[in-house]
Length: 36
Length: 234
Image (cartoon, rainbow over all chains, first blue to last red; front, side):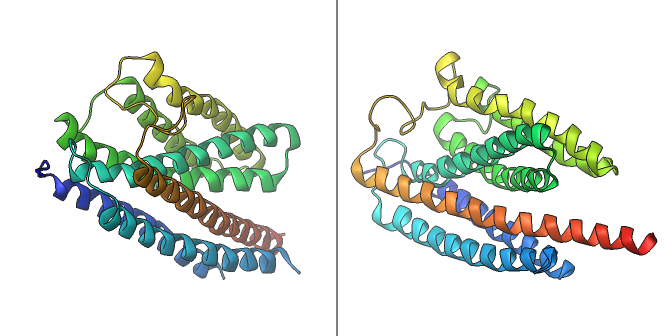
């Protein structure tokens, strides 16, 4: 079956989400560690 | 057990919950990319939906919780409620960055444009900017009681926008798709796709809880530090 060729957009969205989630988790971790 | 010890204990638990949620997110990625079929008309870009919709849900949940806690603060005047409200607001802003980025990435191949100023998109951007303003406002006020009261007022006003955003797709002509799960009729998705979406919603909800625990622990630690500094000065 032929699909539209837009897989790069999907990859970009998944990468951006991972960066935001892991980045924010790391930011919280380091901010807490600074106050420990 | 001191407040600091309790906050550190909460931070440890929050770290575990966040770690589990991130592991769950890896599972969602594998399920969505490998085991969920490609939609015939939209192609692979349709799979953006499995992260965009759940992260939007978690963002709006965070903002709604902040709004409700803000309302509670105005009655209770309890500092812990204020700290929990700002924690939820910051988590909401962080998750909104993912929501407002993945949306246009889906829009470009499907709509042919990154952005359109329709009711759903504009009101969502407005809500995001409102909460950025909420965080800036808190940073600008030094009196803790005034800061909590002013930001609670902003939080309550922003709360009104959350249900409004949900109904914009019904009330206005908009390019944004209508809800496929949170609607009066049964979900309009094939079983495999619906399962992936529901798992992702559960994972992002867990992620929100983990982030909230970590951010609240951080808020308490900052509060303890302020108290210690004030004590040293006096």
